[in-house]
Image (tube, rainbow over all chains, first blue to last red; front, side, top):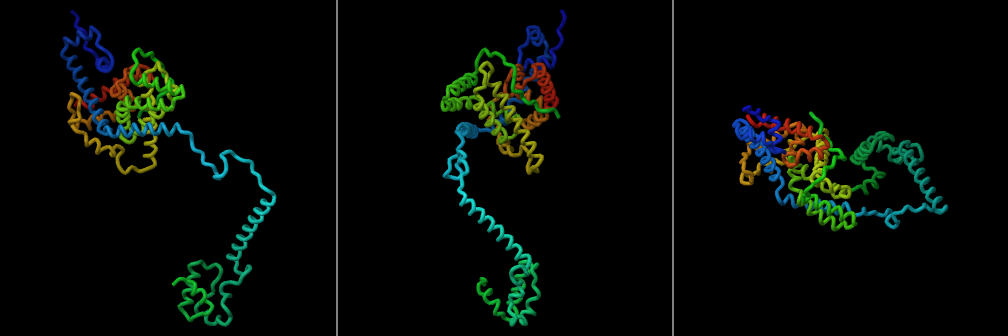
Length: 191
Length: 212
């Protein structure tokens, strides 16, 4: 009698996962200790791996977590089904775009206001950067009678002084001889 | 490293003789949706989620090894199923269709995680968030007839993690999700012969690692 060859490893894997033994394989395995042992070892390993996976996943997902997940899924489905809320902007307008209708007078007023704003900003900028443009420089604010007192305290302040330096100069001046011209400034400065 | 098998949209259909619970409920949900009864469909969908949730969570967790990511993947997959229930084909087992969607959701999350790790320095290891949960694994919880020690659990998890992506996917679907070669083939859009090759290689590698 010819003894059949052992069942291959791949075939054993296939048997464990999907298929059943053929009658010839069945007969062989029944009489072959080696094949039986190999099959048992493989089955044990797979059961162990499966058990490990289940334990890990079930520990990470206890029943409470599954219930929360279930609720969250249904909540998401409900939200997805709801039509998106359209917020009217501006509030009084309907969501549909309305044709732009303006009166000529309103347009002129808006244009003039914009132009005034632009001119104001430009003038302010120039006046700040160029002291001789439109207003006296800071050191000319001091009256001629006080000029003698100011000289030691106020060094020449030019337009390029930054805010920090300018405030420093004011403090120096206040620490020195009292200046009448700086009193109003001192009065409204919180002490 | 081998690329993750992106599951194609079209997979070969296989007639199903016996209908699973999932397939039957999915067919009901589809009918309700097509009839315009969205509320009824949503209610029935709750039963479908309950029937498939545990299996989905186990699969996603094995795939992602992180409870938060697995949670997100499962949620995304179920929401996608409901959104596209009209395209569910009753002749295909629901489990196969759903598994395909779930695997894709897992792949999306893995990609997003890889992107995050590229740009953000990780403070802790990727799976460290689940460490307490894993540590909490109690031997008494083990309902299987095999008693697995904590050390062995870690060993097995590490061994499965070492499998190349394709082998791991096939092994998980075959073993953890309990799908047949034919179903895995449908779910992944690869031939049954390729499924078998990946499965053999995966098992041989696991044996090499775990059978000292």
